[in-house]
Image 1: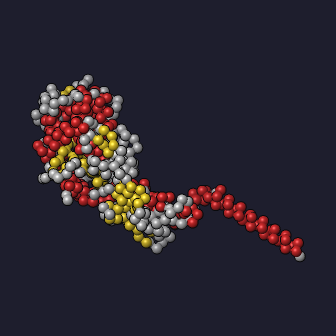
Image 2 (image 1 turned 180 degrees about the horizontal axis):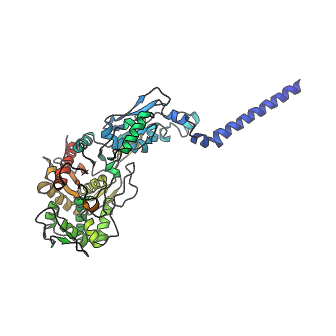
Image 3 (image 1 turned 90 degrees about the vertical axis):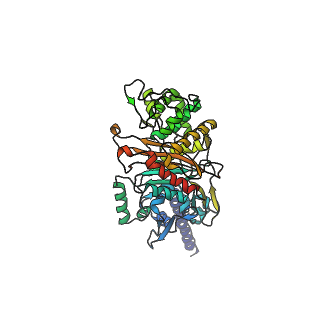
Length: 485
């Protein structure tokens, strides 16, 4: 009898050992395969079993979570969704995440290891932390001023704080309601199909993901390069520039929209946006010096993130002299995002230094404790401080007596540059209206805001579209919002 009991005990022990070996095989050796199996919904169910952390603007959540009572319990909600969509992106149970919802997904969903009380704690307890919050740098009044300024016109606005690189506004129109994509039902699928089929591309973040020919706003870069290189020493001296200007090595003649550009000084040419003067100035400065200055501002930079990726702004480095002339006035292959052109204006305001832009001020735990905090980003010199001083003089002239008077603000010092960029086959497309600017309040020690505005489809006849008439009033509204006490 004892022998049979012993054999049964040994057999049970072997069975127990086999179970343990199989458990180890499943949970250790094949864990990744089971986790990645599309049929395994446990992680997805756990992900949506608790509310998602929030994205905050000026201390106020612009996101939320709704309890649906379903298997995937919580869906994302948004406050003023179209206004903040270029910042938040969307978080969808069906289509994943974009923008801040994507780059900060681990923190918002509660899976970021930094949220764990102890290293590997959640791996042992199989628990999930409450989602943390993301505090943005967005200035709500500036964001709304930009959005309402564009109204139904297609375009984008980017605004930054010159001394720190903090992004104060990021607007793209047309926009969309991200909450429509939050669920996983038929309504979300219909919204997804409609948004993707829309020829106006409402889900495209034009402020950071679309590049445009910058037109005459690029003359800020050309003037800075000429001053840094010593090609221009006296802003008021005649430039010996003919009208029309024949592009080097061609019979193509370049003209101006403004009068009085023949032999104009750099001061006059910048104030009235004379193409002939700046095309010739770019050729005289040379490709090497113009490229160095453009790249100092951020053109041709790879991998810029804010924290989501920003499209690369480009300045061609392999041009002949005729192409260089056109590039010097922001045409040919020169392309820039609105954020890049805001950085150009910010460098002028910040004594020639560009601060790397950033959108996340800090991240916090659900209880409010800080997980990470940002500060002023990396800085690089785009031009000599003495050049920046003279560029501020040029940009002030545009607003005080030139093409940008619509950006003037009572009680503030404002500098700007208008631009009208041609595009399309044979320049047949509706011109893009540009304005870049910076503003400093009377009582401020430094400029508080730099702005870039581009309007793609200005509601005017082709001949009446201009950066000063179309884009400058939007920039003024954004600057006023930031300067307002």
